[in-house]
Image 1 (spheres, one colour):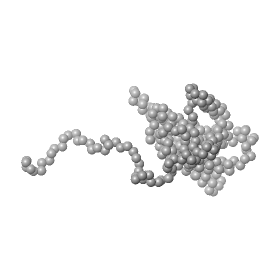
Image 2 (cartoon, rainbow, N blue to C red; image 1 turned 135 degrees about the horizontal axis):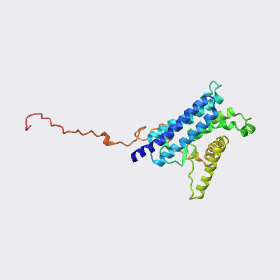
Image 3 (cartoon, rainbow, N blue to C red; image 1 turned 90 degrees about the horizontal axis):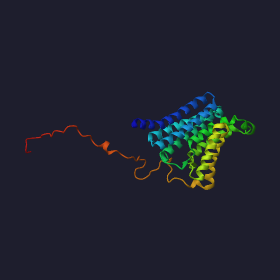
Image 4 (cartoon, rainbow, N blue to C red; image 1 turned 90 degrees about the vertical axis):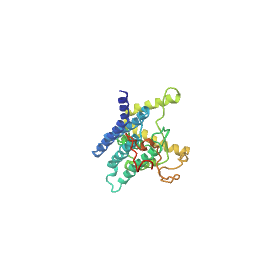
Length: 287
């Protein structure tokens, strides 16, 4: 009974990751059919599933290298390809080479996820090195629902949004590959004033996300992106770079590019025969 329960717990994080993939593929299908509002909220649902799978894996201590790789592959679809398709069908489909902006964004998301696996996957994080791909993907996706609100139509509809969103896509791709540090979801609790304040702000954000999602997600994510840039410029976070950029394939020691991993030497040892091997006689006794 205990073993079955353990196996069931191990499946939960991967099931959430596949749920992320399900919403991402569904968003792609919706975008190709012109249902951009549906596609946007499906990408938000994918973001929720992506947030939960990592936390469930850490709480249950069922994280694995397989789960990390699966999560990155899925994120490339849900927060790379799907948002890029939404913007492509909205503003880039008529240009002959404008799709290259979407290609740049998707490439940046893939590179950012590959770097994340090298640097931060499987470790406790206080900041993200570069803009997280879920934040970038949800920001692009939720623009369209925000553009359909009365507030947008009355106050912001006169701006050149095709140019602005195209520039935003390029900026987000650059930020994902950058060294700008972005905060993770802060811890909350009841023991300290800061923890209580954080909890109150998170509850307010959840209430706004549920009641007025079209007015909440795009501005909130835009503030998150601007916060990272502003903090990097004001506090000089560009000086806090890693010793070696993992994007650069430079020699590191005598074994350049070698993969360091623990070996199970018991598995390398030759198996013992189930019966004793007879000694072969090469001549008469006494030789």
